[in-house]
Length: 158
Image (cartoon, rainbow, N blue to C red; front, top):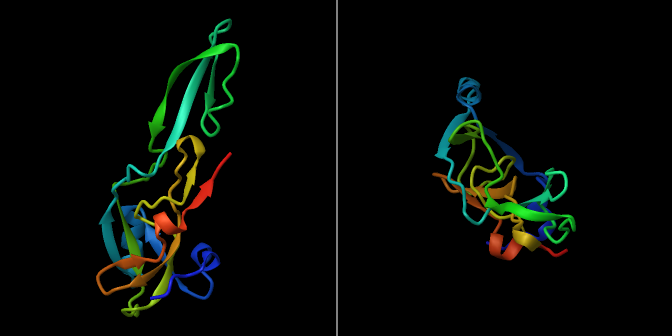
């Protein structure tokens, strides 16, 4: 299979969109509407993370949070907390791709809300956001996602 170009990795184009259900109610409503839920457990990736630093002012005790460019340290304070963390929160520990009944093996679709954690970009200071959507091919049991975090993730420097 040929690798999609960067533009086709970033937008649905003419692909059919497969939605994601993130709650029991949403998944059951889709099942009643004729979709086949493909339920998956959420597995946060250690590769997806953000960094935060908390500085405290010597004079006032007030704090300042820096979460993207940690080089902008305030001159009147000290670092009191910091590190990497997983910045995403979902309503339940599982989700489901809501499959159309007529989905065929080999069909390329657009997953509009990825369940899997893939790195979308590699940024300075430990910023590695998760990919929110991607093209994929239905293989009959699951999706082969057409985004490779090693080859396709953007690199942000700044």
